[in-house]
Amino acid sequence: MFHYTFHWNQALKALPQMLDGALVTLQIALLSMAIGLAVAIALTLFRLSGSRILGALATAWIEVARNTPALFQIYMAHFGLGNFGIHLSPFTSLLVGIAFNNAGYLAENFRGALKAIPDTQARAGRSLGMTSLQAFRLIVMPQMLRVAFLPVTNQMVWAILMTSLGVTVGMNTDLAGITQELNARSFRTFEFFAIAAVIYYVIAKAVTLAARAFASRMFRY
Amino acid sequence: MFNTALSWSDLVFLAHGAGMTLAVTAVSVAAGTVLGVLFGVIRFQLGPYWAAPLTFVLDVFRSVPLLIQLVLGNALQSIMKLGWPPFTTSCVVLSLYTAAYCTEIVRGGIDSVPTTTRRAARSLGMSWFQDMRYIVAPLAIRVSLPSWIGLTLGVMKDSALVLWLGLIELLRASQILVTRLQEPLFILLICGAIYFIISLPIARLGGYLEKRWSPND
Image 1 (cartoon, rainbow over the protein chains, first blue to last red):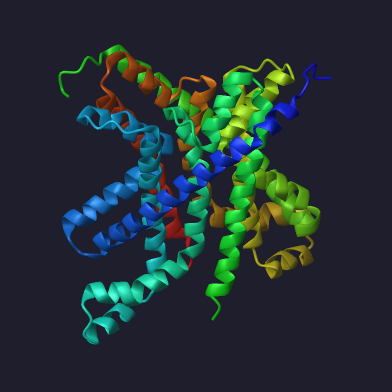
Image 2 (cartoon, each protein chain N blue to C red; image 1 turned 135 degrees about the vertical axis):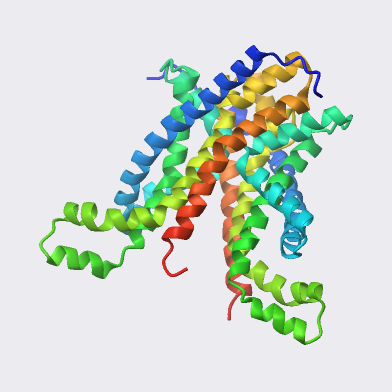
């Protein structure tokens, strides 16, 4: 009915190559999440610090990260930084772009989570003789990470999906990049991208299920 | 940075790109919301077991990168010889993507209406449709409007990806200018500012509604 012969064999033969790409995808997503978490905690601290400048910096970061497209942020890292003579490889600019995006969204999640923690706890910590940094690190932060755990795993799934944007800046080692390259060689667009879609779906589901299992084990009261 | 080669007609070009972004967003959000409300009601009425196939399909749209979805949609329409222009393909794919998220929001909204309230409506003699229209809809909209605004903003930002199909929207327009003028930072900053100007007021409105409408907060 379509006058089109699907060539699944050709696409399936490339599966090992694509799975290698999936590993790179996971690697970028994990790295960007690690950087994003660290920066997001720093931004949360900036907001709590009471300093005008640090607070404004954190707010600016969060607003820009959440109100512009992720692709724009990757372009900014890849093309925009060129003005300062900084030329990043596709891998690095993809990582920087996604980590920037992650940090903004995660910091916003943390802000929501902080509302669930009564500030009397931090004050109690202070009156026990802790410094404010200690009170944050030992009392507030563990609870904040626990409350924000599910939003954080959501962001991890987002990070995996966002890595596919690397192909627009010439990334050719992650799943989307390899798929695009195979596609450019054979023009079997539908077959290759359908398999890529299945792989992305499996990864995203695996991450969600693993996180859920982890949460039900760790956060039992 | 300030002796730029950017001319007035280039800014008009960017504005056209922004118009394209807004057009794609408006069509997709409108169609996606209609579909989302439909699917959300169906999912709620059928219950978790009978709606499982629908849930699965919608979940696929949320777990596969939009870029891949766009490429697949475009390949599919050319395989089926539909001859759609990129604008149509983009809008169809983005609408389904929006619908997948909107379904969750609608279902959550309907879920938040207490069963007792609905039973009271039914025992006052209202039909199912009247119950939906006069009892569930007002309460559910209140709960789901903030997340719907968030979804609209998300779709507006995600619509940047339609550049892959060759549609000249805001980001693609600025990329073309970057290629011609070789001033990446300046032009991308303008592009980012336009995105910011479009989305910040809507985001603020969403935050305001969330604060205003959340009970006892």
